[in-house]
Length: 225
Image 1 (cartoon, rainbow, N blue to C red):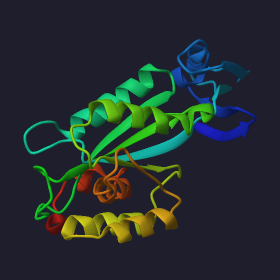
Image 2: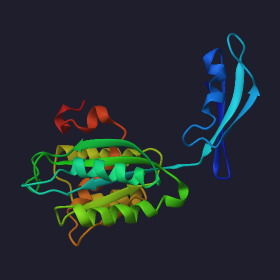
Image 3: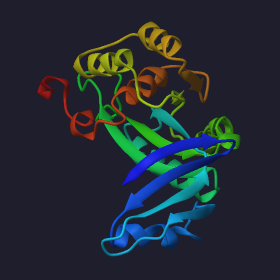
């Protein structure tokens, strides 16, 4: 398994050790996608322990919350969000890692249909970390069917406790725009209105808190223990 990982400059050095196939697997990584190089420290195989280093580019995690891209007549935010994820990866900005549908309060009188928002998770090359914001904005301006669309970008590793609390609150009842902006400011979340209206900000921020919790993200608030 992995013995050590370190960052030097723009590269990540992953030190790995293993027996049998695991001992020779490092050599097979040479030339693999997103692998810069491999270094064999001790050649292994069978019962002999092998050690080596896999060198990959440094990447950074970005979670993007998206809401209000559809109307009651047409569109679906989860579909458009998935298209955005695939588009960013196809352009070489990084890797589209995850797509989480987050169920919010179904009693919201302003909902379009199911009252869900979406969180997309990316591993992004550092030079594109902030550029993807503009790419997503342009994509949504062209394809969103609503004038309430908004996105929220979180550049941390793991959503904070206050973000999760806000998401759970948004599942169980109505929350205000002021609450959403307060959570965003506390956690250095960048909030972006795609058009002039700001209703989508609430759902976009709420999508972030449970981006890594598929087991409860799509459940109704009352169904969560």
